[in-house]
Structure formats: C-alpha cells, structure tokens
Image (cartoon, rainbow, N blue to C red):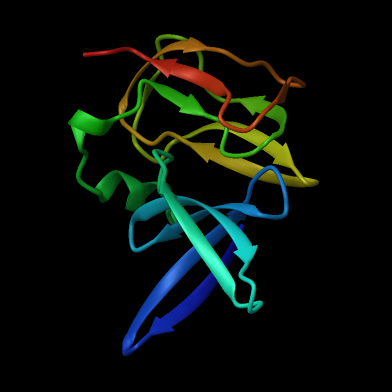
Length: 148
C-alpha cells in the first residue's frame, strides 16, 4: 500500500492506495471513505478515475486508532474478505475468539510483502475459512463473524 498527500484547492487529504488484481484497479482510502477505482486514460491522455464504493475496512495507523472510531453496527460486515490476492501466512484467531476493531486476525502475503489483516469490527469469530499456506483471491471470505 502506498500513501500520498493530495491537495485539492486548499484542502489536503491523506490517500492510501492499494493495487488490486491488475494494473488498472485499486482500493483507495480518502478521509475515512473507501473506494474501489479503475484508472484509465482518456482520449486526451488525462487520467480518469471511476470510483465504486467499497465495504472494506479503513486502514489505521494503529489498532487503538481503529478501536477509537465509533462503530456503525448497521453496516458491520458479516465476513472479513481478502483485500487482495495472496497467500495466508498466519491465522491469529480461532472460532469463538472475541476480537476488537483493529485487532490483527490474519497475515496475508501479497507481492512478497506481509500484510496484517485487521478486524473491521468488534465481535465474535464464528468461523475461520482459511488456513496458513492457502492461496486466496481478491474479495474471498477469510473469516465470518457471529451475527447479533
């Protein structure tokens, strides 16, 4: 993931950019909002961005920062999904484990980099759907939370 500072007018934004399946698709975090975008060149060769809202977790500088954000229980995901294709290196939770928003639950290797996968919500793990050494695709379910 790469971090950029973007200034539009007199407003500065911190933007995190994560490549997805190919050179044209990215997950972008801007001011707490997550977008899946496809980049393409317009006929005049000016870059164009086509955003699509995403339901992925917002990255944070620390687990504590993630836990300090207020929870939106109406939109909490039932599954934690792979943010990118890769190989599971570690599974840090088991069914029945109580996790807090921002806790590391898995480690995923992608493009020879280890990526800590953090819980986007607080709750109880109902099912772990992957194991160390398993290859996963983008958006594949990794674990499921108990509902309620």
